[in-house]
Every structure is written in structure tokens, then in C-alpha cells.
Length: 241
Image (cartoon, rainbow, N blue to C red; front, side):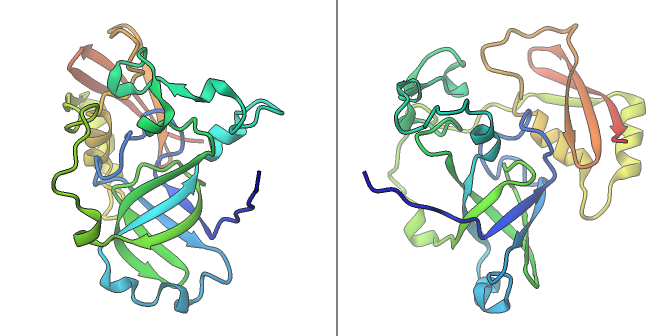
């Protein structure tokens, strides 16, 4: 069997510092922001010349945390446990073939994501609408081409519509904290609303109104709980030490 070696061309600095609560698809949280830092020699202007005429790009990347959690000698392309996965869209218990899903556990830990370009600087591409973990290695960047990338008669009966958003509210003290920390580059309130509205808990878990959940976004520890199955309340926004 022929093998290949791939080298990252850059890395993502993302608002999402932990895997938990990252949107399960790109563009579901337009307020999520990040920066692609290109490695030499791709940090030269020639590599991104013409990209100023493009609004969105496809990113090919490595699921680096999935890869790092793989046990030694457990290769993706020979272990049969990766033939079927449990996608959240089907409740987290029903299995389907790995190639019918976008699960992170794959024969090769490669993903693709469509993101919006916000700004281009020397060696850096500012993006939004991302679903990528901080420090994600980027393998390739390609421009989105509307006439070729949109297929009007495409169907997917497993994921035929975006997930239904649930209500997100803020405890009084938490809303004040979020408002005081917002900047033009860091739209914390809409980011939390858009992210948590996707119902981030594992799909197979029942709602527990006594349980507290948390993750790291930007430089904050975000904590929340479920008031009901369709209502999340942000309870704390704590600066990371």
C-alpha cells in the first residue's frame, strides 16, 4: 500500500480552546473567529495573491486532538472499530458507516471546513464562522467557488436541515461580565448564544438540570446549565488565570 507524508502549511488560532461545545458544522456560529497563521514559505504574499477577491475558503485540516488521543499502534486504516461511528444527529447511539458521517474519528484524521474571510494580513488570514479547535494544523486552503460548490439538487436524509436551536439566556451577573469583555474582534455574547444554541452536550445524555457544564472560549472559562431541555443559562464567565 502506498503511503504519503503531509506537512501543515499553517495553524489556526481559534476562539475555541477546548473541543467541547465547538459547533458541529462550520458557519453555524458566525461570531466565532480565528486567525490562520501561515508557515514559511507560504507566509509570503505570493501564496495568497488573489485571495482578496474571495469571500469564503475551504480548509483541509488535521483533527489533531483526535489523533493525539489514539492509543499507540492503533492505526486508523487497519482498525475495524473505525468502520462505523455514532453521529450526534442520530442521537449518539445509532451507528452508521464512517463515510456517511463527518465524525472526527476517521481512517485518516482529516477534516474540511468552509469559513468566511474577514481580513487578510501578511502571513495571516482572519476568518469567522469556524468550527476548529485552537492550534488545529492546516493542510491546504482552497477558494470557495459558488457555481461549482453549490449543488441545488443535493440531498442528505440524515442531515436535511440545521439542528434546531435552543434558547440561551444569561444570569444577570454573567451578562454584565460578557458586555464588559466584548470588543469589535471578540463578540462574546453572540458567540455564546450561537454556540450554546446548538445544544453542545453529548446527544446520548439526558438533560440534567442539576449538572453544570463548562468549556474554554477565548480567555474565559464559560459555565452553563440546562434550565429545561430547550433552555440553557450561562451561569459564569471566569477569566482564565
